[in-house]
Image 1 (tube, rainbow, N blue to C red):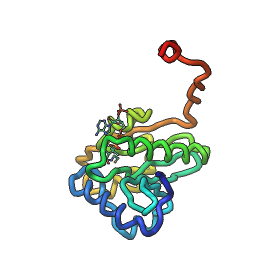
Image 2: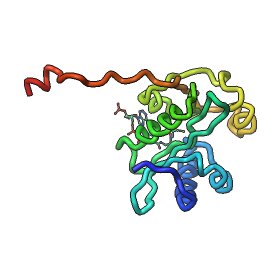
Image 3: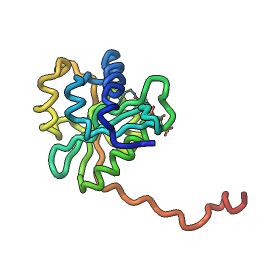
Length: 168
Ligand SMILES: CC(C)(COP(=O)(O)OP(=O)(O)OC[C@H]1O[C@@H](n2cnc3c(N)ncnc32)[C@H](O)[C@@H]1OP(=O)(O)O)[C@@H](O)C(=O)NCCC(=O)NCCS
């Protein structure tokens, strides 16, 4: 189940992000920053508020947003949760009428699977001014920039059975 994050989810979100930050896969985020931006977050979890994944959509202007802090709990990778969270964040972005969503990531392959393409970071100077210039890793950054244009083309509706299904 994917839902809006609640304040009680913040400690788990903090733990997950900083687990990957310790491995230099993600950038760390202070607890205070996460409380301030909790309304940007979606979490994947169950009815008991167990959180096993998270991701945030940060707006820059009326056309542009960034997917940030996307991760799933260690040991739960490759079960489709990352894609499901990304899809929900993209639906949210489309519902706001945004034109572009980007991400900076050490895992561009995952985003390419989700329909993003690699692009130049210089396309997003607001991100560079706001975060990159004050980042310790600015001069040896290993993150790639990926982006996706919105709205995505509508997927063709399945109107008739494929031959394989007919004969099955
Ligand atoms: C990246 C991450 C969010 C992906 O979540 P996930 O739940 O494991 O991914 P999914 O199971 O939804 O995978 C979707 C597709 O991406 C592929 N994929 C996932 N992680 C991948 C990786 N590290 N490298 C290459 N492909 C990857 C999957 O194989 C799958 O492809 P398929 O549709 O052809 O089978 C997760 O691995 C994670 O939390 N990583 C650590 C933090 C991180 O790197 N965050 C990235 C944003 S900074």
